[in-house]
Image 1 (cartoon, rainbow, N blue to C red):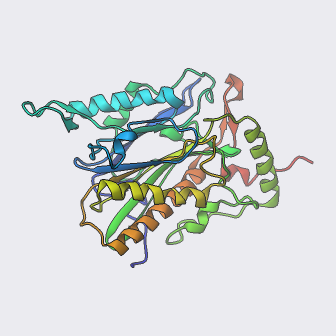
Image 2: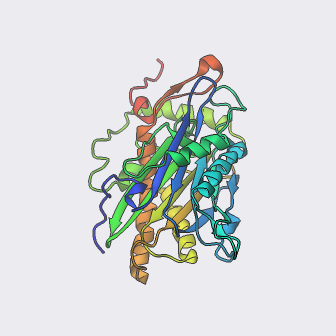
Image 3: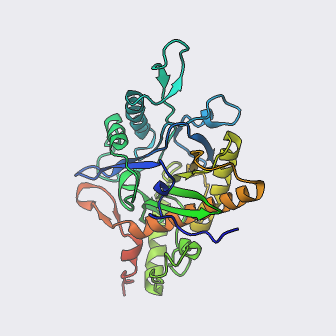
Length: 350
């Protein structure tokens, strides 16, 4: 096995043909958004849902026993179940662009776009409970999806995210192993902590090519303040108030069954970066996309690909936490959360 290295942008878009679009709603009264992953036509999809309180769309269709195997887009959004409306806009844009599963033998323009989705619960964090992503937000995310570098932190579906007692967000990472590229994009809104007891990030231990070399260790004062904040955050939790969702993409040729297995193994990446995961309060969901740009891997190479995908999920969570920015919305009733970076300067009272 070759030593895995990050792709050019260290992002899911290092997988050829994959594009990402963000819509961020952070105007007064809002703190939510949409992130859309758009693969090339013919991409095979899979999913694995492990959280106890998921909010999803079209996940049953991705079961290996179901007919449809191609995916036109994956939507990650805030807004809890209300945010699933954003997938309607993506579906309409995909249809307008001619993407979808054919449903007519006579008219090839009659297609139904396949747009699975998952959401996080960020309701009310910007101040207004009813301010949630709309179909137009989803449509705009599709139109603005691009290849190349991907914005991270408090953007898109991660705009109103939190993780433990800290500000969460969107992160991405990639790896090239045995000539195959794999990448992940993750929205971190977990009940669990991204931090070890000393306040350092779990995810930095999985870095490739010294990507986290400049990340400082947390000091004891910051750690103490963090755990106090986490305890307060847990006291507010209800079922569905958390969730980590994401997409793993690869240019390997995989079957629908193999995509499902890739999603299952990718969940290992959550466990390496967050503790605990898959709780009754979380809706943890990972989608997978295989574009087929490269040949089908051998059995052993497939294992290497699965391991790299889990590591990409872990590293993406680390990038999300590092890129997140502190939010102070107490004036209009929203959240007040420090980012992990800002927590380094936190002083314990007294």
